[in-house]
Amino acid sequence: MIINHPLLGPRDAQEFVYLGDATLIDRPDWQASEALDRFYEYLYLRDNPAGMHRELWFHEQGDRSWLVVTRNTVTHEITSVELARDVARARGRSK
Amino acid sequence: MRYSGFKIIAQALTGHRGWKPVWREPEPKRSYDIVVIGGGGHGLATAYYLAKEFGEANVAVVEKGWIGSGNVGRNTTIVRSNYLLPGNEPFYEFSMKLWEGLEQDFNYNAMVSQRGVLNLCHTDAQRDAFTRRGNAMRLHGVDAVLLDREGVRRIAPFLNFDNARFPIKGGLLQPRGGTVRHDAVAWGYARGADTHGVDIIQNCEVTGFRIENGKCLGVETTRGFIGAKKVGCAVAGASSQVMAKAGMRLPIESHVLQAFVSEGLKPLLPGVITYGAGHFYVSQSDKGGLVFGGDIDGYNSYAQRGNLPVIEDVCEGGMSLMPMIGRARLLRSWGGIMDMSMDGSPIIDRTDIEGLYFNGGWCYGGFKATPASGWCFAHLLATDMPHPNAAAYRFDRFRKGLMIDEKGMGAQPNLH
Image (cartoon, rainbow over all chains, first blue to last red; front, side):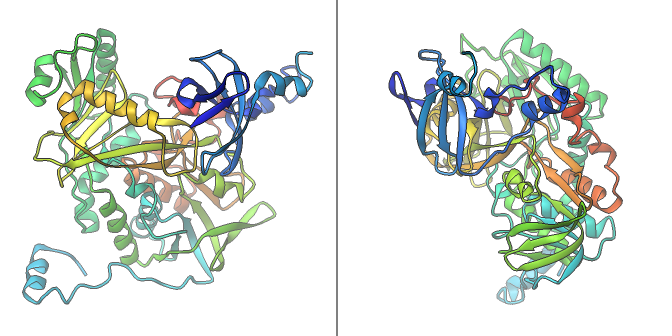
């Protein structure tokens, strides 16, 4: 698989480390009253779709940036690659 | 029809015209007491033990494709019970004991071959860990032998003992481990279940569950609705997909694991050998091919094929451990989809939906577990109580912090 890095261009997936579903960006509020349930779901439960999947890849052998890769889990086709930083900021994080 | 040596001779003399189909192809009835989803090793074993050991006469197995078309036909056929943790070891040893009596039990040649499983260690720390694991095994009544370098050399003199970076320091041997003919396991269980009256319904995909007031009443399939007092789901690889139809999210990711086989060679390997400095394990099939594999690819996948970096990594491990493997040509490689759970251990449990039970999360160790998984799941389905040997495989262990993390990796499926 080739991951089209937004800053570095096409890179071999071998340079990256995989973390999992991109919902891991949305860490629950630890002070919320239902934090225990939320963290259980955040940490352990996954949608695990067959088809389009937004997921986190870390460019460990490169510029060490986190990417959100949209990839089809049935065909391995990658349709979009974004910087995780931009995705998080677009959701109002780390203004 | 019971199989025996006499039968084979009699058939040989009469031109093999008397063999009958090994199982029936029944139409689905409108309802059953228990419906098992998934006609793989675990589902068929569940149905077999339900009928044979728990006296359930009204059982069906529904399978999307043909039986044995999934991971039971795609694995590397190794059986062993060399686990460390108390939640795992009694279960896998129970499975080992069932393997040992399996062929007589279901009257089918599954080619159970206890030729030994040897895990190599390459550092002092690794030997300490193996000593600990071997002691844990022996405390559970399982055979374990700690070998020194010369002990390994006596068993496998062809290994690379001159590797300066990863010297072979010794190994942990389980002599009772070995290999089993994987397809024959599915066929044997299917035949045994069918003989005991189980309906095996192939080409029947489950498209949904009928759930009313928190109770599961049966399954919707491509061949119509099939009612059931209890439904058991044993579809590892596709667990998330099937259970999503019941509105459940699982602590599971699906990953692809690749396996490889070389051209046929003369008898070479005495048993199963695993490399401790990289992820590589190898055995030799009865046809002579070297059967080997390594890590999962490490990203979510439902494609039954992997990518080249892992192939390269596995072959590097092979070359490092036994350089002569470089002279053999690779015949085939393929991939299977694994239910990778969050702690690397399986789940055999009821769900929050009454009458719906789940068996899955086998990671890449499902084949060796097949008999015990079937027995324990049948126990749960028939009695509503977990089998003592599978009592730790609960859904709520994640919420309660009771993980069975054999490798100590934490909640990241691609590291197990």
